[in-house]
Length: 196
Image 1 (cartoon, rainbow, N blue to C red):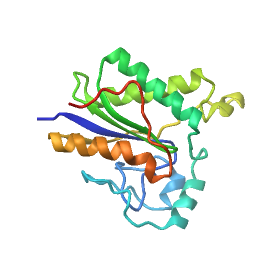
Image 2: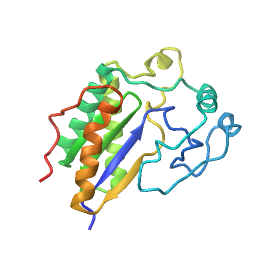
Image 3: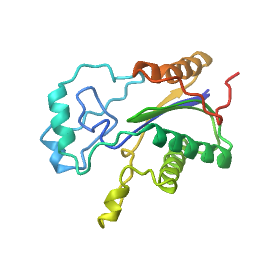
Image 4: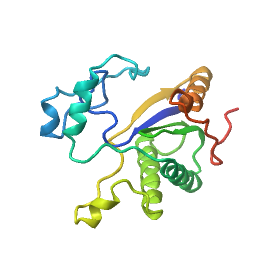
């Protein structure tokens, strides 16, 4: 039985659809990115983030993006978490762990009556709404120049179903410790529900 899911939302430009380590994309929307390879869809249940890749090729591909890659500041991370909290209050979903990183987020969510895609879209939308309400949207300057503001998030999300108590606990531990890998402090958010 599915007990929950580990969700990962990438900031725009973090995980490209043709990443050498794999992606969740079946196609590439941008002609400019195609010269760096075809989509690298993977169905792995484990993280592929540690697979080797050509850092120069990745940097060149990021320069070909329509907008600069998004890197969230600490203030933006707090706004994102507050946006998640707004959605948690409205939907009454359970979030057991959350890490807001500079270029992606991890959430461990409990099973809910909303389909996972709907819940993921609500969470990303809540985070975006809060960034904009607080004047912290990374693309705010584009609108001032007459360009429609894109989402600060990459299209889609990564999900791993958690179907055992051990899976849930491992995902919670991984998410909790994720900031330490980047030399950041552990994060404690008030909207989290302990997993019993």
